[in-house]
Each structure stands twice: as C-alpha cells, then as structure tokens.
Image (cartoon, rainbow, N blue to C red; front, side, top):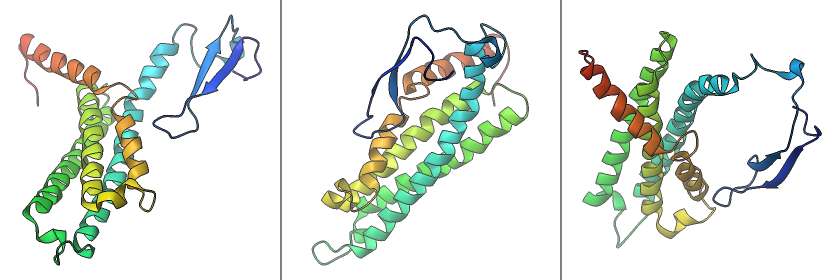
Length: 202
C-alpha cells in the first residue's frame, strides 16, 4: 500500500533500546486497499503473516548464531590478551566456565536450528521446533554476549567493541516475533497434547 494512501499516517519512529531505524508507529484510519494490491484472498492476511513468521524465526536464529560466534571469538581472544594481576583471565576457573557455558549453548542452538528447518522442508508447520529454537536461540545469544561483556569489563560497555550494540539487539530478540513466554506456553501445551492423544514425541 503506498504511503500516500489517504488514512495512512506514520505517527513516529520508535527507537528500540536506543537503536533507531525501521520501527514506526503507524495509524490506519478508514484506509482502503485496492483489490490489485491484495497479496492473497481477502481476509487471509493473518494466515499469510503466520506462514512468513515460521521461516522468519529460523532466519533470526541463523543470524543469532553468527552474532554469538562473533561474541564468543571476541571473548576467547580477550581472555588471553588481557592481563589482570599479572595473569591472563584465561587462567581463572570462573572464566573457563564462561567459555564452557557459551560453547555449549551455541552448539545446542546450532543443532536445533537446522532441525527446525528440516521439519519445515518436510512439510510440517514445525510449531514445536520453531517455538523451541526461537526461545533457545534468543536466550543463547543474550547469554553469550553477556558473558563476553563480563570478560571485557568496562571496555565491553562502550563502542570500542561491537558488544554493547549487539547486547541491545539480543535483548530485543526475546520479545519480537513472539515473546519467550508465548512460545514456551505453546510448546509446553502441544507436546503433552500428543501424549494425551496416545502418541509420543521425538
């Protein structure tokens, strides 16, 4: 729909966690969409949007894996480059826990993501698989970047590294395309439902 259509108003841009661009509050007042502009049958817009959301969530997870790997690489390099009390932080057991936790979460998400994509390719709506990876992927990204910032200390909070910007994007990931709670509730309802019907899962 052209933005100069009568009744279509962009009210304001809404920065997300201080990051501007591409998110706007829009008002629709008696807007008429010409028949030739319809993307499908009248009244089926929600169905079309839902069909896009599943693969779109997988695309988010693929991007998150790349960002998490970047944060992980930065963290591991920093553990050897930095000196605290004469030794690199890599010598500290707690820092090794940060490495382990991050590696384990990245690898888990790395396996769950193609699993969800394969379910879609097989013709499934893959609601359980997509809901699961959306939550696991967003949490993984947040946790890995958070640990990397912790390793960098104050330097991780300023624009000298990409971590502070990545962290803000990561936090938003747990809300857009459905907050964690919605996906957790859906998955937690669907799997027991299969067993209630006499089936099994997995």
